Image 1 (tube, rainbow, N blue to C red):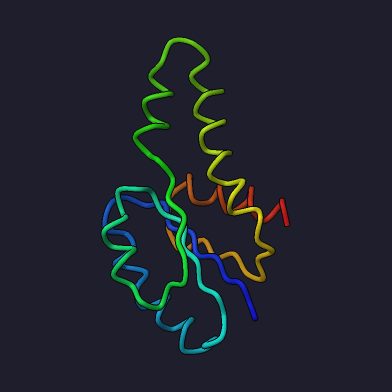
Image 2 (image 1 turned 30 degrees about the vertical axis):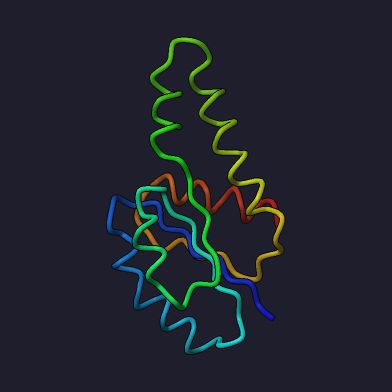
Length: 116
């Protein structure tokens, strides 16, 4: 079975624009495990896509709060993000697809690809 990870860290409602990609992947790879990475403000949309087998949510507000802090803001934000990404790294991904346009998504995609 193939493990395919789709990353889209664009603004709110971005998952709706990747719905056709997710459905196409499910059609081409019916036995594959399709997983999705999004910011936690997309949670309500991720749950309505039956073609997804699992999803990972990054706590956007928590990271932004850390970045606004006065004591080690970058380190706290990176540690928070790395905790979420460590769960994703437990799976050996056959394909990692950056489906969005954001720099954040590109960085996460590159990070996860380098861990493979």
